[in-house]
Image (cartoon, rainbow, N blue to C red; front, side):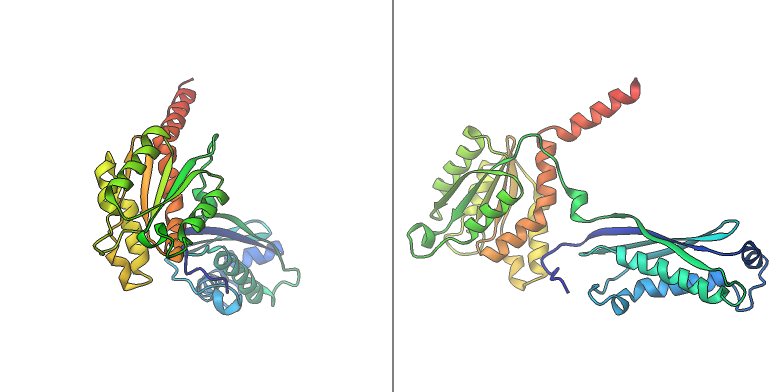
Length: 314
């Protein structure tokens, strides 16, 4: 299976459908309760629900999912039955396969229930109708690429005793997201130097995003949160809370992070962990919210709402 351990859970939904064509007299038999095997719709509903919950046993590479909802509806036409399935889960992967499997099994169950009275049965159009909750739903479009900087904070890296890998990885990831990385600098764990550099990024360069890595722990030289808190106009606690929640699910040490996030002018500053893996996993988890925050700070959401209001009034 694909490794999804680095992904975060979101509300995932999917709708799928299938169509079973048959003779008109078969539809009439269903409506009048004259199917020899019993009520095909009731049995198909149960079968579809079971199929959705056990998709990982049918489709080899599907992950086991804690489904929150499976809904099955049927529409009877003159010579067909439309099966509609909706599935929901708060998890790391989508539920489209669960929805499609449920729709398929519902159609197969109807086929099995009705084949003894109708030799013209045909399953058609099994399809995915919609899905939500994946990363494509949280993409933000920017007319002008976001400008960012990465600040690597480590005494050992600044003195050449250790190589920086976290900062390099963050820079690479930001560029894959289409951002322009204006600067990447290594500094020792010195609160005054950190303060000055953050002010430069926010006040003079007026960058959109500044990411720091390192100095967020309990060591005597870990002063990144203090320096960040001193220069921000207001804190964005949800971002740091998300980092600690995500990190604590992977290691008990995650709860020891003192990282903070905040805003200075139109610059959003976030403290990331010092290790490469933790920094990239944290950045991946934060990106949807971070990009949306940039859009709000730039006034994008407000402008769109005003434009819709003006259009509606015409």
